[in-house]
Length: 197
Image (tube, rainbow, N blue to C red; front, side):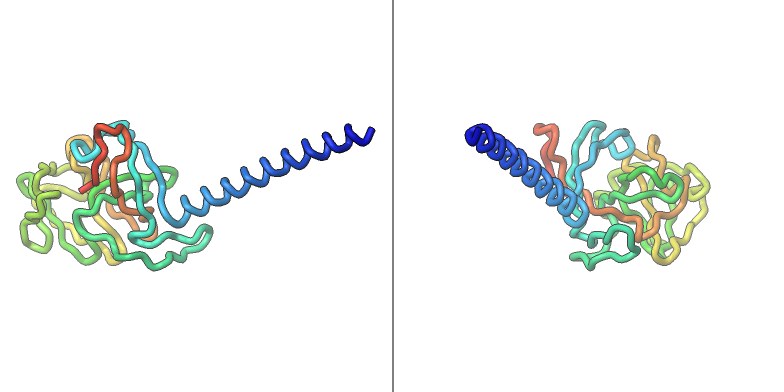
């Protein structure tokens, strides 16, 4: 009788260890995902050739500072988003999805798309990460000859593959509070392993 009780207690102890280990691992994963990084899979061609459909990317939340869940508060990051960064954010027209685009205009900037090129505050953008792409005058926020002003606290973001990108040209501006993080590198497939620029 004592032997049965000892075996039963051993099984309960082992089960409890497994449950505790699982809970600790789950809590750690949630903590890391909330405050440090997140993994995303690219679903569309809007960022070709920088990002291809099926690419799995690592997004740093620390760069711009992670948000504290259920609050409007963001912990201070290493720096603020900069022009040409590839950014993951929640757009104003679709609150259930995260989008990934390249940051073109910051608060206060005047942005114009002319003959496939980007002009910010009257000057053509020559940064190769932006200038290598051809941008089309499509949507209400990118009409030909129309300069738009980015409101303070907002961003104007475009896909590198302008012809097939649903971006700021159509839905306007993303709020700084809706930025998730900076896309850092492609980690899968291995043949595409590279930093994102």
